[in-house]
Length: 184
Image 1 (cartoon, rainbow, N blue to C red):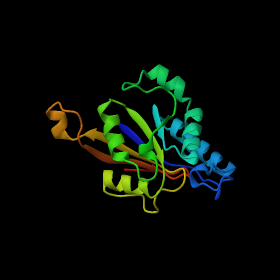
Image 2: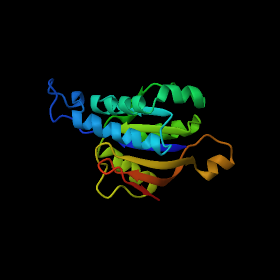
Image 3: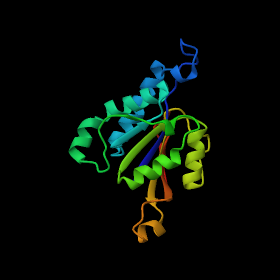
């Protein structure tokens, strides 16, 4: 599976409600996220599944990526296995402190081919480090995307079992400010 790990875009410092989970993207954050989504689409790296944290800034980031990449249409055309709907999915596993690794295992088991998860720091840097044994040097910048190839472990695949663990390899890091691709 091609996994796209994305941090939410730049958000307001304080929400009108005073609650952290209600902080929305800034206009500059929306534009940066649109630029990153366009870069993914141009490089044929657009996801067919997008799963976001329930926090407003992550959900807005995911919705922008879905709109710019025309997710619903591409899912209809691709007939993505594993139940991809073409809509952004909201999962608590992507909220701060959630079980993103368990979610990734679930996505691999279901046969998804191109899945994006949108979440928060420091969880995403720790997730990338756990998957590929290294995190981006500067951490996950806002709107950054890290591409990872994720597969069931060879033992699971050889025994025809569901993936209880996964192996992963870094594919790229897309810098959201310069739109420079660092490929491995």
